[in-house]
Amino acid sequence: MATVGIVGAGAMGLAAAYHALKAGHRVTVYEADSVPGGMAAHADLDGLSIERFYHFVCKADASTFALMADLGIADRMRWRDTSMGYLVGGRLHRWGDPVALLTFPGLSALAKLRYGLQMFRSTRRSDWSDLENRTARDWIEGGAGREAYEVLWRRLFELKFFEHADRVSAAWIWTRIKRIGTSRRSLMQEQLGYLDGGSETLVRALVEAIERLGGTIRLSTPAREVVAADGRVTGIRTDAGVDPVDAAISTMPTPYVSRLVPALPEDWKARYDGIVNIGVVCVLLKLKRPVTPHFWVNINDPAVEVPGLIEFSNLRPLPDTVVYVPFYMPTTHAKFGRDDGAFVAEAMAAVRRVNPAIGDADLKASLVGRLRHAQPVCEAGFAARIPPIRTPIAGLQVADTAFYYPEDRGISESVRYGAMMAAGIGS
Image 1: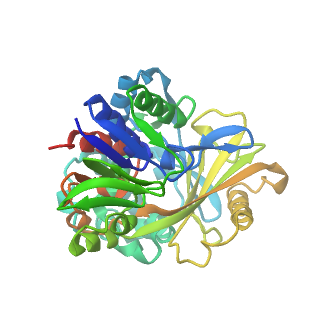
Image 2: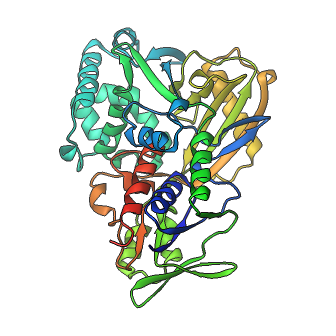
Image 3: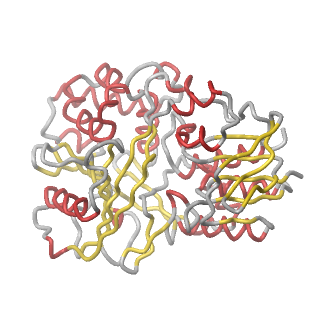
C-alpha cells in the first residue's frame, strides 16, 4: 500500500485515483479548480447543466464503456444517429457519406473518387507506423490530391493550428478519421454516443466511488510542487504545506511540469517544455431554434474564423438548441485576450453565416470557456518527442493529453491512461 498524490481531477486523474484505491493505495487528488472533471466538467448555461467543452462518444471508445460498467452506470449510455455538414462557397452542404460526397459541388469527379478511396482505406487500416513521419498535408495530397486538400482541409488546419498547420502529423489526423469513420450504424449512417446527463454523469460516479473507497479530492487546492529528495518523490506541496507521499501522478498540461517538478533533470524539463499547445476560447450558445440538422458542421469560408461549429443538441436531446463555437488559437494571438462579449458576437456571426435566418433575438444565453493548453500540436515524428510516463524520479509518473498520440484528446484515452498509471504505482 502506497500513499499517492494525484495532481489534477480531470478524467485521467479521477480514473487514476479510482483504480489506485481499488488496488489498495491511499489517495489524495489535488485540483486547482473549484469543481472536478477538468475539460469534462459541467457549467451552468442559464439553468442547463452542460459540458464547458463538448464531448461525444464513438463506438471504438472501449475504455469508457469498461469504466462505466465497473461504476455501474453502463445503462446511462445513449446512441443517436447523427450527421455532418460542410459550409463551403457560402452554402451548407450535407457531408459524411458516399452520396454526400458524390453530390458535393466543390470538387471534381476525380478528386471525389480519390478522396472517397482514401477515407475508406483509412477506416480499414490499423497500422500507422508509415504515417508517423509524414505530415497530414503530404498524406492527404498524396492520396486524395491537392484539390481535395485545398477545398476540404487547408482552412480547417490553418484555423486550428495556425503557423503549425503544415507540420501536423498524418498519424494524428488518420486516427481522428478512423475513430469517426468506424462509429457508424451503416455505410450511410453515422452514429455517435452521449451519456444521459452529460459528462457529469461519469465525473460524479467517479467522485462518489473515490470517496466511498476512502480517497480524498481537495478542490480549490493547486499543487505547487511535487517534492523529491534523493531521487524519489517525497511529497506534494500546496499553500497549506507539504503532504508526504510515496508516489505521485501528474496529469497537468506538460507546459507546467517543469515548474511543478523542479527536481527533474534539465533534459527532461526541455522535453516537456518543447510540447507546444494551442489555446481555445469555446463559446456556448443557447438559441431559440435549430441552426442546422447536423451535429457537426465544418466551415471553409473566408468570412468565418472558426473551423466549424458543433450543434450539441442534435446529439444530446435538450430543451433548447445548444451550439459550441470553438476559437482555436495560440495564446499569444491578439484575439485571445478579448472579452467574452466580443467572442459571443463573433460566434453569432458565424452561426448566421451558416443559417442567415438566425438573428440576435434568437440568442437566449451564452457562456465562454477558455483553456490555455487545449490542443497539443502533434507534428510529424511526434511519437519520438513524448517522454516516458515514468520519470527519472522514482515514484513519479507524468502524462497529459499529448501522451495519447496518435489518438486525440478524449475521455476514453484519459481513463485508459489513468488506469495504466494506477497499475504502475510501486512497480
